[in-house]
Amino acid sequence: MSIAMQILPEGGGAEDALEAAMNYVGEAFALGVLDGIAPEALAEAALCAAMCELVAVRGEDHAAGVASRLAERAAAGEFSVSRRQ
Image (cartoon, rainbow, N blue to C red; front, side, top):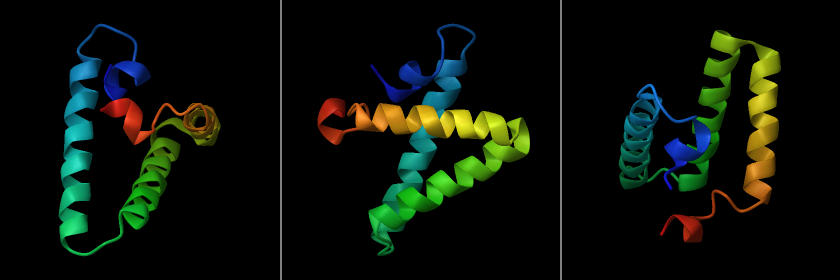
């Protein structure tokens, strides 16, 4: 199951939009790494940019809820590279 399917409910084409967005982010990471930027720096910058956007669009409470759920999901191993292979 893709990350897009794990994040969004089924229907409405939202999965397609998120899958496309994930592809763009993946390409940005690849370009950054090719330019010598450490992957962990890219990851932290991407998280910070995403949180700023969530706060701007949905507010602090929503962004805090997303961050809380991401922490739980990361601790459960949902984002481990070995699970994506």
